[in-house]
Amino acid sequence: MDKINKIATELLATGKVQIIIGYAEGSKGRIRPFFARNEKECEKLIFDERCVQNLAVYLYKEETSRRGQQAIVANISTLRGIIRLTTEKQIKEDDLIAIIASDKEQPFEAHTFEDIENYLSNQTFQLNESDKTLLEQLNAMTPSERRTFWQNEMENCIRCYACRQACPLCYCSQCVVEVNQPQWIPATANRTGNTEWHIMRAMHLAGRCVECGQCGKVCPENIPIHLLPIRLAEEMKILYGSTTGISKDENCEMSTYKHEDTENFIG
Amino acid sequence: METKLLRKESHSEWIERLLDNQEVYGVVSQNKRISYQRITSPEELVKDFIIPDMSAKSFVFPSIENLFAFIKRKDEINIENINLDTIPNKVIIGVRPCDAVGIKKLGSIFGWSPEDCFFSKRIEKTTIIAYACNKADDYCFCTSIGGSPGTTQGSDILFTQVNTGDYIAEIITTKGESAVSVAPELFEEITTDLQKEKYLANVPIRFDDTHLEERINKSFDTLIFDEYAMRCIGCNICAFVCPVCACFDIQDENRGNKGYRLRCWDSCGNKLFTLHTSGHNPRHTQGMRWRQRLMHKFSYMPKRIQVKGCVGCGRCSRYCPVDMNISEQLTSIVS
Image 1 (cartoon, chains in turn purple, cyan):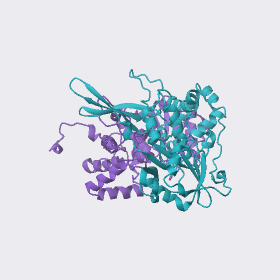
Image 2 (cartoon, each protein chain N blue to C red):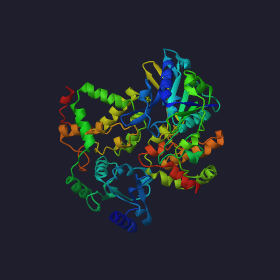
Image 3 (cartoon, each protein chain N blue to C red):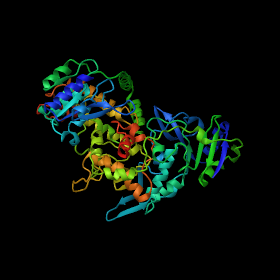
Image 4 (cartoon, each protein chain N blue to C red):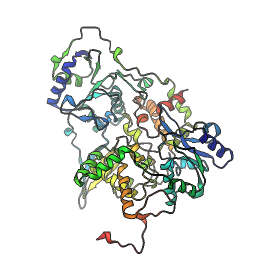
């Protein structure tokens, strides 16, 4: 897509940014994240239907952010990640330019968050068919069937934490699973330890998950682990009517205390 | 070493005889996963696969090893050793030659002074029945790193299936002989001229590793690792799927006053790797951690124990979520 290269080259040439986070051809027909810092590198930037990774995860990494002002080639998932990271004050509003890309229309620059919010307000967020089917199946199960399903899946988890590392919202400088004095979550990769870990992660993402499904995409064991936070996102819609990652002024329902909270859920 | 012929009709029968005596593991396919699992019948084995998702290393170096148990009482802590004699005999069927080489290389690591009693006991109890690869994919690069799809290194028996469906059986060790001894009558003398090389997968040489150690040492202070690892997200997949990665972390896990000291797989990709108590980390960027991964495999290990820390199975690249491709980086280092 020549337009992306043109936008990127111009942004670098005018000195507005020093690095463009985007996608390039990888090995054996795969796509890889790519970081363009000069005109020649901009030629490698591409965007097509394979570019599904949520690149927002790179925005706060020292390896990329230390190289100066950043622009990012952003699909819908990445944009929602950017919005949420801004809400949670992990990136600054004026720190970034998004090159909004989709396989339907020409890429364009978004310099303000209003631009991103406007763009997102015209989009529909839909799960892919296989996720939708599996989620429907899970919803239709009895609690004990669901428990069996997840426990069987949990047995395969090898605790590589790729789910956490791939997630833009998993930015804690020290993850609770790595605290061992005292140890909150067993380190052992078995059913119990793995279940505790994934429940903890899903609960921490409740109301924060931008539904990109990246955690499930990277799982080397093909565990549909993304369906846990995505299911909780549905719950948040029911409880609070909120969708995450569409407006920088959105609420942080699960981490905000208000005096008038009814607390009736405590029973 | 002896070479015999196992007819395709006899293959299942031999496995059934093995199952009479001990725990047998094999490569099975389940929910899109290809893995080494305990089997109860030869029917469960998957025949058409390139490589299991995870290597066979967990048989000899499990992701969690209980090193000892502890019980805290009022004034004292009692330590109990693990009874290694409870580790059962296991036969693993369908191991890929690269995984068998991986286990042999782990032997060089864990056998390096002082010898590791857990690893030694497990390897003593494990019989590795490998099957030569008759196909490979674009990620395989064993031939670039001194391996071959038909190498017998690390295997107790190596089977190579020929065009008739029969197997050439190379019986390499006494453990291999004892696996054959459950049904010796099924293993026939080879009477025709069978060349196993004819039936092996073609794995192209992707780079010349002759000067790899020297070149990678020279690259230490360059920016190539930083550049390549900008996209690395620091997960542990590459190390966990690697048949040779042997770094571990020690953790205690307890319930009430009883617990275990555990040896858990670790990964140099993780940002906590070698983090000091002071908060200082000598490898504080992803590029430094990626450099450590490559230096350890292709410089430090060859220097210390005369083996490369890689078998060319390609798993790290196959499963990397951000397409970090080790043979691509090694190719650029040697050229």
